[in-house]
Length: 485
Image 1 (cartoon, rainbow, N blue to C red):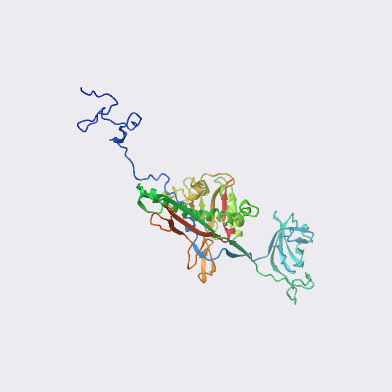
Image 2: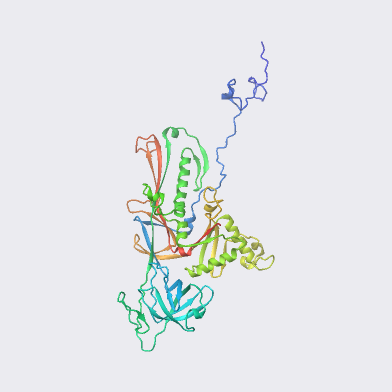
């Protein structure tokens, strides 16, 4: 009896041709159909990964602006200069008596000598110059005699005032004996005693913290090889199997080394970490250091950009006035800077100043400003991927959002105990634990009993990563953090 082919049955053909009777559907895997094991039309599988997120690594920021230096201790301590000249803010006035420390702060002392000449000014533009008649380092007040008025109130000063010393005036044949602290004498015009000012400095410190990670693959999975062709972010490429996950763990850990230097916080008294048993002490990262000791610009936008930016310049004038600075910005803030620079150009052809582009009209059409000069400062602008990536701070808005950071490009000269010589360091640099016997900058080792490791009876291979480091943010008063509103 001849077999009559019907739709849905499997009948092999004598020649290699596509027929309705010998076609195996991809979905023919039901309980009544056992032909799926012999499917002759297999899917086309791409063995190469698609890099749909581009370069996923975030590190590189600190390599651009800082350096990495070894250290051997549990703490790094550095000192920073205080201001050279004598000045007091928010002073209160009663008659001709000025209280230079109305809040009673322990770190504010009266070091103004009698016979010193001072400028007294308020926040409304009024000022008067005066001679100090009575001053005592044991008291927070000084008595002054204005040169052009009978009293400070008569000079038109309103509210709290600022006082700074600009010199002194002594009579003929006078002397300036040193004031002896604790002697109880008052420095007055009559005895013309003098207060010696000892230079002081401010110390800061930070703690290195230990960062660890591990990748584990068991011995059975190592024996089941599945190849994948990859192009990794560290510049390598080729075929990987189970070690592809190890490669990504390493890349992620290298990002953590930089991210912890940017985001870390010191453990605060009364916090849950301080009350717990973890023993964590934290570390002061870049953002925390700027918020604690630096400058914060809130709500920078293209509409008020040049006014806000000039406020930053005026503040930099009161700090270190470092000429060259770098701007690391998220996408929106970078565009705001481009719009700000384009709007303030008052040149020809639609307001574009060709002088900014070497008088080239073709170059002037490129409005992605990478560098500019304002006042006596040079600024170099670049995008910071860490602020744009969706897996980190990208897309965040509101008061807690970080939109950019201004970092000075200067260096400081310090004595390095490890090297035994004076070296120049960037204001921003990383310290990691290292000695002649152990370098903890970036450690990696294998444990287990698979994949070439023979250290334990664990039927797996463990890839361990470890580092111990912290960030040193020196002269944070020259840094600016851009935050959202």
